[in-house]
Length: 408
Image (cartoon, rainbow, N blue to C red):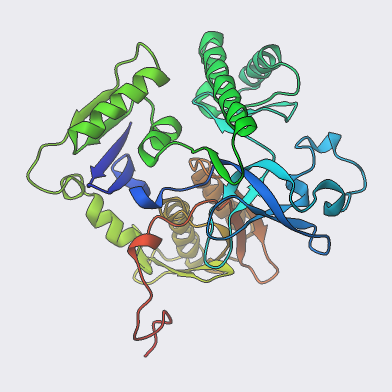
């Protein structure tokens, strides 16, 4: 069972997801800084750069959005031309088009946008023009995968595409069909507004943080929702009643004297989870350093002395670290390239065990992650998709004394 703890302030909502007593996800959103990822805009092409195979699109934000050629071609790979055309053949300056934000604006960069549209629902992701059906890899039973794929093929029409999400496992056809119909209506509303509006214009904004978490991470049948503001609790209840009609979720309003994050142990776990050095259950440590290009994680035995066999001690420490690293990456929402410097192991079998532990940990992550493998220098390389700014970023700042280096 999971617990979703929600702290509400006049202009901020903070979400904490707890699994088996451990904090695994955290997110925060200020009302005036709501994420634009997933939002649809009607934009105007302001620059086409054949040398970069990209275009810049004015969508009404401070910085023009970046549109790469691959995000203009047909979303189904089999329907793309064998030789990629120049971006100048596909787009022209002044052209209006509908785009969807796939990456948040960060630093000096504008948002990254695409014409490969997708609308997430509870059971599926609806793709109006993708022309294929896929099933989440986290659904492993082959018979269930085939059932869902057949349902998707039967329900979709024309060039519609569908990805069946993990929650669709064992769902009746009626639930899946209802989800699809709701998403179709949403898409039609977006297109109707696009036909009547002038660019640049916001056509559709993705759900706020509370609704997104309820849609993507909350199981109304098994999980518990605890909110410390009654108004938001009522909104959550109304949203869940629309999302899963007939199901009464476990939810309540927190009325204790202490801060809700203190009462449920979230505050303490946030402090330790966002520290540079994190202690492992067995006495080892991991040290995390994030740079512009990648995140580097170092594993140390520290106080863990293990048994008589050094290889066994190292392997146990690395296995503890792999499980904790998978949790911390998810908690901090670390994206991009991640390099882990595990303690050197002699046996190939032990290296396989560590990769297996890491892969088992990231399977629980809703964000797409991939373990690449060991480099020639014995480092573990992995990647994780990054769309939104880190949840901690709005609440942290670079030290004015050391400039972020940690050295004086």
